[in-house]
Length: 285
Length: 242
Image (tube, rainbow over all chains, first blue to last red; front, side, top):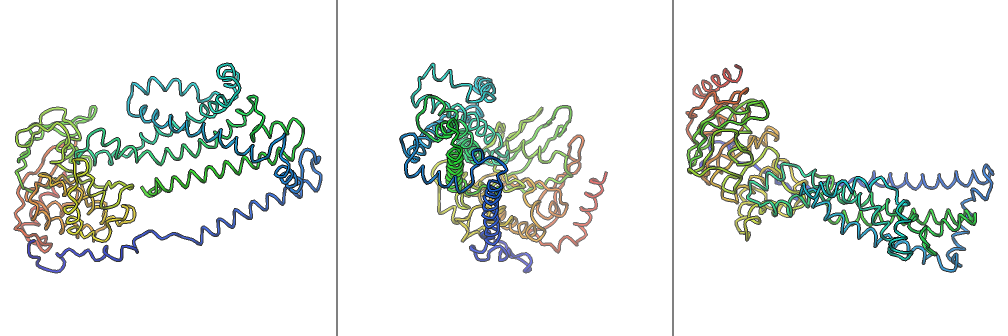
């Protein structure tokens, strides 16, 4: 090391070298509390408005039952079930259908998206089918699925798979394409091969968008579920809503909708938890 | 290991970014390349790095043509380009991991030299800009490159950090003895760091000045007030203003 002539020439890193713990980005708990409080107030206000509107008989009670009536319907559903089985059976079977269809969509969709993003020939082969399938509403597949696969669980799961896989594929492709060029240049100059760049740079770079696609996809999956349970189902939340609707039991319909909404939200939260585990850098790059 | 550029040109569409540049960069020298944005200095660096190919002419290192990037010519970019999914230590080890087994003692030595000890387990986004750029420099240096290519590496840092990093680089260069090609748009940085200075002009990108820097080493910022320095700076400013 050459002798330095004055202090100003010395490497002074002290400014940066404070306590490492202090460098960690501080969270702002106060704001989180405020926003959570806001959410609770909004939900309670919604319930209150609903109660007022139904008490004022703006709509006939058969069309818009009061929140309390819906609550009683829920309790009855929990105690006695509906259509010969309990609400938990409906929740279980619907969740299982979603899980199988959605996980299959991820397991098949992510690799297809990666291949399409990486190989132009594969992209040109699959893209027309993808663009064709995307705008087709899931309901339109039902007759075909019934003819081909009967009325068991397979066509229901396949419907969810078909409905969600375009979202996953497109999200994966866009995640790969969004990899910053600098990250790839850095790896190249450090002597990484094409395969290493894909595995160690592009794949992790695509993860945030893949997770976004999964969060969008889980919503689509629940949309498809109601359609899927039009196929000769005798249980499931989609079936519950349709069956109770035909019997004009609006309270039960509303219970079904609320349970679907809560479950969908819960599944999205689970994906967010997994995302936080695997993509802790999200929002920092 | 001299780097030779022979009549190197690079066109982007109808725009000639570099016009028949010939240049020999001696082994172990510190070359600074100065120019305004758009003069082709980064294009020049990318060609030497092998990230880009020339439209005409050829580049060689030790007589061997440059056909692509290689770990013998590592680049430090203006942005650190660290991977947010890796810890600081794993970022610095990234290049070695791509080559084979990692020499961890070497990584940890480099972390110490760079003044990053205690931050090994941190993610890049938890570090200051200066620390991130030191990590990027460490990641390049553990490869033991013969040539270090630096593309305005300190341009995004604040003035004080930049000043510290410049002094730091000079000391480091004294120890590692690699050839450095340093791109900058800062006149003082170009004069203060290099042995030899190339000033480029735009449209088309070409070399306007190529001369030795007549300052002794070790360098010190007081030198920027001496007649030789000011004379050189005046010449450069005249060329850049032209």
